[in-house]
Image (cartoon, rainbow, N blue to C red; front, top):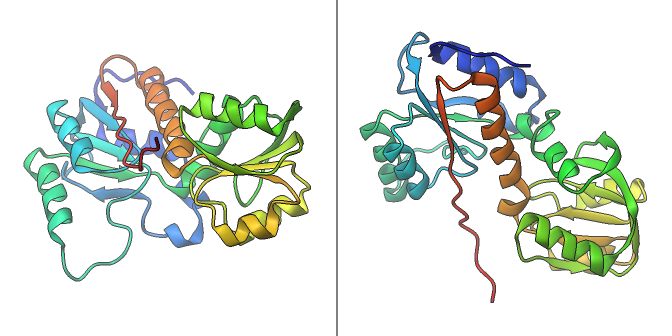
Length: 259
């Protein structure tokens, strides 16, 4: 897909985003949380001149988008996921930045996880997985045989992130899922597929105790496993839209630092 626009309209941008990650492939729990979360462009014919792309909608991200004079911010995690009856201070402050600077917010969550060229297939490319198949939780593929210690070092280097891991075996078959997939359901799928290693984030101690004998489990952090996919999305938009619209990727890691 390669489309160049002299002038991009909001409707054209949304069509392009839905081609990249169709809303209908989102998980059921994302119903109504995909697409335009905050529409401040008010018209389908509004011109889009600057697009910002990020993983999380934080105050710092919105301020950078405002400084960039972005018309729209494309995110992975919507800032309005659960229904609310009262707007807390932090959310009011965050939304005020968007309102004051006329920045719309468009979310691509599990539809982008599940899309070809999305969060999980980007990770598969980063680690050179072959014979890749998509599952209910990410992707499964193969790598040349590598020991656990060497593989976790590779993961840390490629994602530029500290990590936690359990296991010590030769790795060839790998399951990867960006975000918080280190749960009992996903681990069961990994076990059913006889993977040697499962890379994701948000691992519980009880799951380590139960599963560490069957596979190497690697927790590289939520941000580090999803941020690469959003960076690739920004690069893809630059290529497909052309130079008439500016695209800025905003990196703002909110996770705890290790020493």
